[in-house]
Length: 322
Image (cartoon, rainbow, N blue to C red; front, side, top):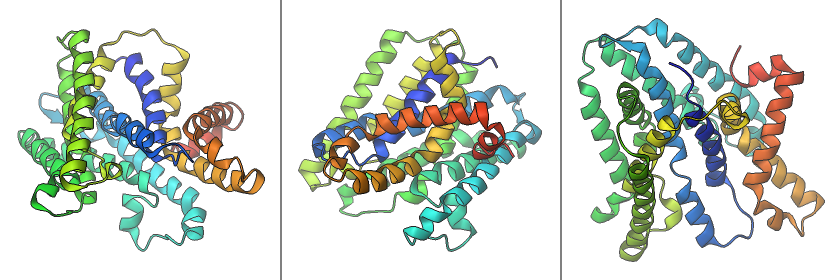
């Protein structure tokens, strides 16, 4: 499949959105922080959708040859190993050392669950095609989405706080499957105007959901990670991105090359920024951290570009190309 510059462009924006989700924002008002994080929740589903979209053409005659995903599998394993080594000093400093290999697989830092989840998505989808049971995928996907909605927020209706982490780890499967379906429907026959309307509707539903849970159950907005509106919001945005015919440009190139690098190492930049600012200019650290996603994002782009140019071997290692 040819590169989709619209998808690559939104990958770059998605990397910035992930940085917004994980930023502390210093002294910025909590209401603005919660809204900005809510606005950014499309990013991780988008990355899963993109992986499924580019996996779709590899599925031929209802068969997925393992050789066609072997490179993806090996790359993800390499990235898990490399990220473990990179973040080991922080784990030691914060006394959060992994206790076993499972901890490494699910991520030694909170954001790294994405890698293990994506690896699981590839393996589950390949396995179901291998045993000729791919018909299970739509039902499995629906079950996981319902389970994620319930355990993240809707468990409040039964006055329980069920664990979201385990079901969140499986979210790669439904979104990759949806991405595969979108790739099979190309060109997607739905108007851009309708898609933009669905994107806005999804965000409005997300916001309405957080207000309902706050008013009915006093459930803090900061706890929400996955809502019904998130599904509408992220899928509609992805379909729109897949339809946009952009010429090759600097931003799509950066999205293709560096979005994963930004995702992997942005907490490291935040850690360095916070430690440095508190020591150098403590009186202004909170103000500067209000802009930490933008500052960190620009720094990571510059770092990625220069590593690729001047230290290509190190760049390859950091991106899992061993």
